View 1 (spheres, helix red, strand yellow):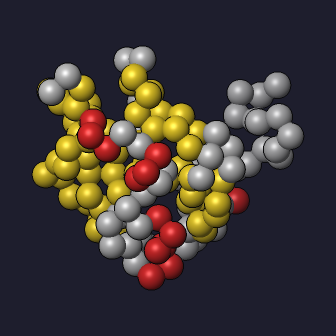
View 2 (view 1 turned 120 degrees about the horizontal axis):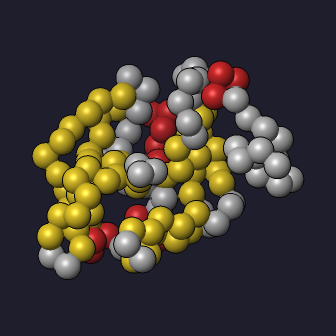
Length: 123
């Protein structure tokens, strides 16, 4: 089996994803871990698909350990979703991964479904 395929799901290509991006609910179990610590665990994520970009899973804030995240000074802007807030991952009181996650606290109209949800960089 190809490493990019999930059993029971057809293969996807980022070149087939839409522009502007599409938002869809996701029921697969999504877990985010760092150094053996579970940061997020959900079956209620939202997946955003955008041409030439890998899918991004946005996790509801109630399914994350928000006490391990500290807002960073970094700011970015997406032409579709709006202004992003970035988050450092802090373990044992110190920053372990700067800008490990991002969120759209007040996203553009078409992306209200991800308001306040967190996305994590895969590495």
